[in-house]
Image 1 (cartoon, rainbow, N blue to C red):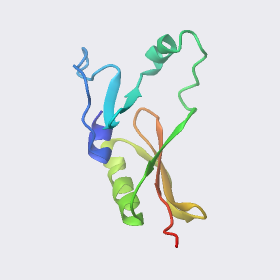
Image 2 (cartoon, rainbow, N blue to C red; image 1 turned 120 degrees about the vertical axis):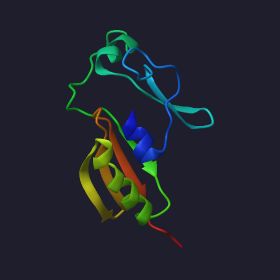
Image 3 (cartoon, rainbow, N blue to C red; image 1 turned 180 degrees about the vertical axis):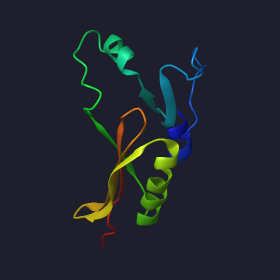
Image 4 (cartoon, rainbow, N blue to C red; image 1 turned 90 degrees about the vertical axis):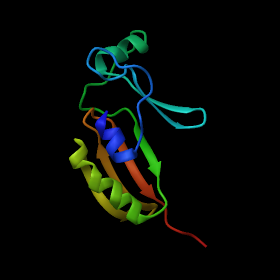
Length: 118
């Protein structure tokens, strides 16, 4: 939970469960858009029996579009202190300046600043 507050500035929604963390952990990203992070044990229940990936496998990558290379670098710098890992350091790609990080819960995030065109 601290990872999402410290890196993204997000506040959790909902009342805390016994461990002090709302379950499922949810954050409002914008009007009508909510990020919900479900623990592996509960994910099978949500998917009604569908197979769940192993903890070291990411089934999706969440991408956050940022305004500049400096903003990508600033967020990446916050990741280790917030309990996450930098999986791929910021670098210029053909399609933009990008980095890949993962939170302490294993969710993969890509931070991207697309190149300025025209």
